[in-house]
Amino acid sequence: MYETISTTLTDEILIIAINRPDKMNALNQTVMAELALAIDEVYNKKEVKSAVITGTGEKAFVAGADIAEFQQLSAEQGATLAKKGHTIFQRIEECPKPIIAAVNGFALGGGCELAMACHFRIASTNARFGQPEVNLGLIPGYGGTQRLTQLVGKGRAMELMMTGDMISAPDAFAMGLVNHVVEKEALLDKAKEILKKVHAKAPLAIARVIKCAHAALDKDVDGYATEIDEFGACFATKDLQEGAAAFIEKRQPKFTGQ
Image 1 (tube, helix red, strand yellow):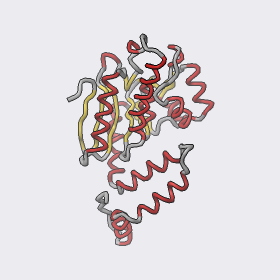
Image 2 (cartoon, one colour):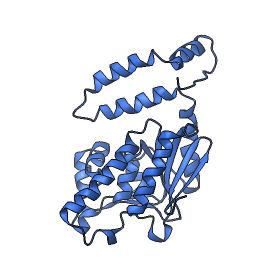
Image 3 (cartoon, helix red, strand yellow):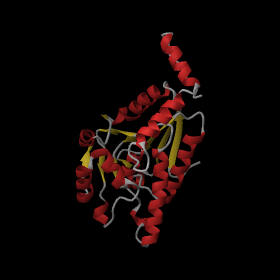
Image 4 (cartoon, helix red, strand yellow):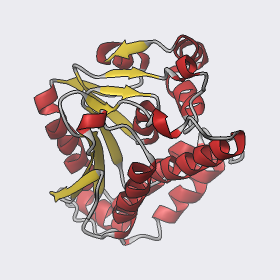
C-alpha cells in the first residue's frame, strides 16, 4: 500500500514506521504524503485506538529532511513546503487518539520535529536529538521552533537551535523532551505497555485531555474555559455513568466511547 512507510495493526495500536533505512529514513515529499494518509487511518478506523510512530533500521528514527529537495526552492516554495509540514504535524498533535513517538536512533531536523508533534516520546538509549538546520542556513520549518521551546524552555531551545548540537537520550530525558529512555529492544514494548494502559480508560475522556492540554499552550484559546466546557461535556456521556457505577460497585469499568 505504501512505498516509504509501513503500517502494522497490533492490539488496536497502529505501528507506523518510516521505511527508508538506506536514507536514514529522511523525510521527502512522498514520506510526508504517505504519513498523512497513515494518520488519516488513525483518525478514521474504529479498530485503531492509538498509534506509534517509529523508524526502520538500526540507526535512525528520522535523520532529517531530504536536503536534495531543498536546493532549487524559492522563498515562496519553501514557505509552501513548511505549510504542508505544519498541517501534517498539527494533525498528529491534535489527534484525539494518543500517538507516541518511539525514537530508535537519530531524530534530527524534521525527525525531531516529527517526534515533538507526537503526544509524547519514548527513546532508546542510542537515540540522539537535534535541530541542526542552521548548519544549512535554515531554521526548523515544521513547528520545531515552537514545540522545542514549549517542551524544554526558551533558553535551552535557543541554544540547541543556534548551535545545532545533538543531545543524547539521557540529556533529552533530563530536559523533559522525552518521557522514558529504554534499551532499544524494549522500545516498542514500552510504548505498547503505556498505550494498553490508556486503552483501558474512557476514550472520550482521553480525547478531551488531549484537547485541553493543547489549549493550555494556545494563545488564542482560554484553556481554563476549555477545561470547564470539556469537563461538563463528560457528564453527557455513557462512559461517565459507567465509570461512576464501576467505582461504586468496586469493579473494572467497561468503556464504550459513548
